[in-house]
Amino acid sequence: MVPIEGVGWTNGPGGLPFLRMETEQCHARLTSYGAQVCEWVPAGESPVLYVSPHAVFAAGTAIRGGVPISFPWFASHPTDPSKPAHGFARTRTWEVVQVTRESTADVRVVLRLEADDDTRALWGSTFTVSLTVSLGTTLAMTAEVENVGHEAITYELALHTYLAVGDVEAVSIRGLEGARFVDKVDGGKEKVAGGEPLRIAGETDRVFLDTTATCVVDDPVLARRLRIEKRGSHATVVWNPGRDRARAMRDIGEDGWRGFVCVETANVGPHVVRLTPGARGAMTAQIEVVPLD
Ligand code: TA6
Image (tube, helix red, strand yellow):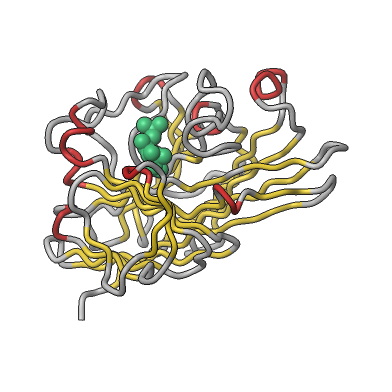
């Protein structure tokens, strides 16, 4: 690959391979382990992605923060709880296909994961999944799945984005008003969101259905607004473990839960994707920081 000024690979925490970049537009870090963006700081801003100070960086463990990819299933496996939560994409090392930058444009990184004996042991389908990340003053991520086998495949996919916030109990999330959702902290009951922006009070784990809306996280503490626009996605997941559940998790720490909210661009549950042989499905999330009015 042609060297790019300000962009290079290093051995990161846990010896994982990290691509670091320092351009006029942003500084950022991503690892080919899980194709996970772990840092994105647009020029003049504070970090937009949350990574837990207690995150474990080690092969076989999911990194708590940044943008883990849930694929080919979301959360627990639907029939076999012994299989890894959120699938295997976040704990596999992806092939780096391309790192490019045209003059002063965004840095573009393409990573790919293909079916092999290990993935077949967990999921019988023959697939290729690629992630194209564009890092600049906005962060865009497109995950594309291709059915390269002879049978139809179905999968769930989520860009499980940990957004850094000043205090999760102070933010409000706009864009999901009136949407139907599955409330996972209330036995999976289906409900309809009210007309007000969503506030986080205690453990929150909601799968919003039939929504293609842009979400905006208003953060009065950091005095900024994060805008998450999406394409090819029909579900949005909002998650924060709250104090008590966070305590039971080994990689969040005492007050870590206050520092993030996950707003996940997804195709999950009833929005599972079915691809016939040769077909492709793509889903994009684009994040930007916009000033408060
Ligand atoms: O996206 C929400 C969720 O599925 C929650 O139910 C949840 O516990 C979380 O993701 C984190 O899962 P993990 O396997 O990374 O601990």
